[in-house]
Image 1 (tube, one colour):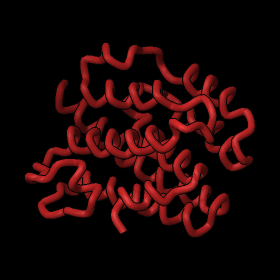
Image 2 (image 1 turned 45 degrees about the horizontal axis):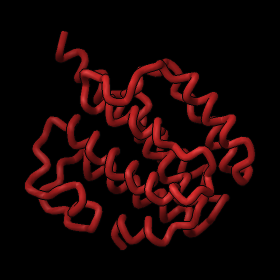
Image 3 (image 1 turned 90 degrees about the vertical axis):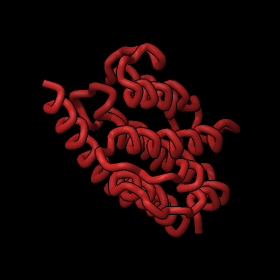
Length: 186
């Protein structure tokens, strides 16, 4: 099943976790010293969404300030827009749109940061299942997004811990890519 189909079939918790996981993997681009800045949102989601708005405010306060469109680095600006767009409740009508946008945004970010060419396909075609010529970093991000949605579809709240583990692994990889890229600029 394609990523687009998985998102279309996801319930509210799956959508919230999918979007949150995409954002969580992009935390290294937000200049956060603490990789756990979004942990309160994961906890709120595990509890069924109570205090989501409070946890969102805490997470935004824990991440360095910056305007989504003012970043010199396009990938960081995209990550900031993902954070700015988080719905105030994990059950709002905007949730599906946000989760879908986060999926596209995370794939775009991985494409921007990958040192290898991603072939001719667009991010949209990648999400629909056309994966010929994908670069390794984009392919890995696509696999993580699919795996998270499958974990949540099969296990509901029980899959959140495993989804967080998959996301944490992706964050470590992206942190290494960002660090390698920064060393190359010096």
